[in-house]
Image 1 (cartoon, rainbow, N blue to C red):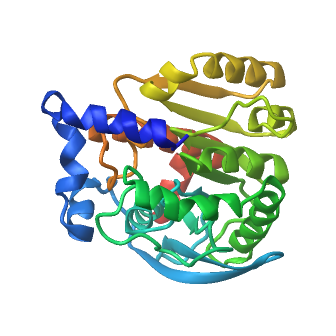
Image 2 (cartoon, helix red, strand yellow; image 1 turned 135 degrees about the vertical axis):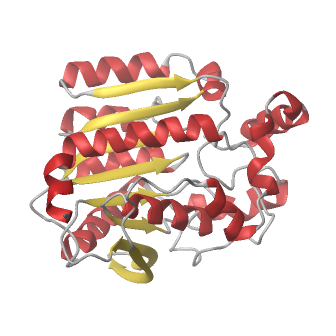
Length: 304
């Protein structure tokens, strides 16, 4: 989970970045153009169109980004929960890339109760104390119950879009603090969510009565849990607890610690972005979605 310890870990890591050149790739990227250059387009990428949308929830109006293939058809839906730095260009680009692979994607601003996205200026990162102080009250405004209400509203929005194939299941992904939100979404709408993926998810296993891992018996999906190496070093028992829970619930789950990665290694604007490991995780996610949401061979044939 992103906290002062994460910032300290990342600072120590970056101080020795000469041994891992990828650590500064995102920092060297010049705005959106640089980010695009670092995100390889999928083979046979579909043309897509995206737009900012407003979604009515029981708690207000959430701003979000919706993107889907241009080709007239319907596609499996995906709900993306961003990390603690919220909805921003990097996540919109990731949503675009997923849509290019044949998905209808909603990436949300989970902090809409406090602010519209993006709420960080260029160059601001969670490593900076002032940024952490800025985000702290936004995190405090979130609640387990509110996340569940949001999950239901967001999945309903996806299902209402003409590009969404409602005959197929949904997938949901989450980064950092979005990890627990994936679990809560899958438990809130188990009849819709067939796949879930978390990347350096924080707080998946806690000692609280509403811990996300306790929701596993109520889910009906397959999972990818990609764990940062430094998160695992701090909480080495979490992966064992997750594996046991998924096994008991008879739910497929690929749970892996990604060697030498730091918390936050997946978004391309992260200071500890790891291209090789991020691509590995991305491809494992696509394999999960292809396997659980539709027969890729049949889909490809339909596009001919």
